[in-house]
Length: 442
Image (tube, rainbow, N blue to C red; front, top):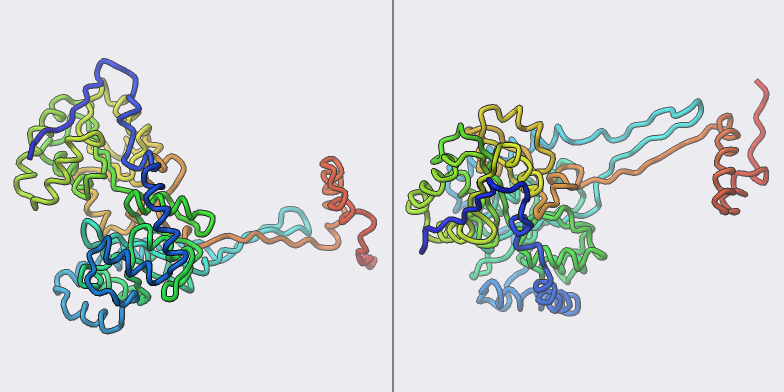
């Protein structure tokens, strides 16, 4: 396979080519067409459709596969997991839980807006949330941690996992181990668009949920959008993407290592090295083949496809400010800042899902064990969206109370608003027609 790396020299222009900002999920029209019949079949056939698609898409050989993971499957997963992997899962769970517990908002707050007028918010968990854990290009107990821990911290009463099955009809052992350690044992074997449809409509086995969170392929993203009138699709989280932002201070061999991280997820990922240093740009291109040669062949192939394609490679800008401008326009899911003073440069970034600072903070660490959530907005959604958090598993209810003493003044102003906007019913409700109890003289 070719070691070609896409290279864009922008040193002679101030314009950012729009094509460089595109992702594989930028145009979902073809995916909408493909997932529409899948959604309809799940809606009408329920479990039978899930078993059909498990055979068609996941290679499951048992036509009677149990859709829900059994307690025995959880036990078998614990028996098979390597001790060092179990230790790593527990380490990640502990750090991620600590971070999200600190993030949890207080149950309620209230202020006295004016004498006798109180108003506040109450934070309550969403009734039911499905956590999507992908499987197509690997096994991801890390995604179990990132999606279910904030839900548990938030106190969601019904928290479930949907994940594609293996060809033998089982769920990845690490996924089941992480789920049980966190306290989630409702794990359902369905993936892709069919999983989104299952939790949107409900089937004989899979419960309908109010919301779905977690990253997925363009098929999953398309299904979420099509079903957004049935289920809250959560933050837009599609195929992985990253920007490695550097000045001239970084070792190109190290920068090349970090450029590979998100590019190895799959050919639908996006990954760019953005730098104002020609030395770094050329050094990264030269360093990549040696890294690929030392990787698993499948993952190296994914990385080569991304970094040699339309959605990845190396961008050289005329100066560092231009590199920052490109990064903000791209609004990456993951951003690494590898510069002389990354903390100072953090203040120049407006749009990114997460920002990792310095050469000791590669994306790998945050994907697994640091604590902040690694389920992040993709496809430029970081311009308006935030990382997955405890807040995504909760909702706010505003509340207010007005004392009889404060009522007359508030009612007078509200009646004026209502009459100006021609809402006569609103106005009448706060007019002299309202039979308010008379205040006793003090």
